[in-house]
Length: 125
Image (cartoon, rainbow, N blue to C red):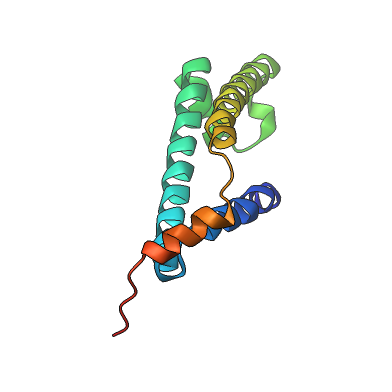
């Protein structure tokens, strides 16, 4: 998880924070962390929902509560793995769909960024 997160989170955070004026970086960081945590919690629950639709509840509880792999039959293991595969495919499709808005956002130029900074009013306390 850390390797995948490192491939996405660092460039994404850099891209987001480069668009935020210096005076608002604390707010930008807080919002980014909030969206990351909400996305993580939502995706985990979505994965559990999809796998529970593909695999019977009794089998999931048997796998979770089993003390050893010998207590689960081979067909049950295959059913669980097929449910896991279905879950991964659904989430991959959802992630692929999320690429589209990211590609459409465009790039910010320095001119646009400077105009935003010029409009900001800075108050020193």
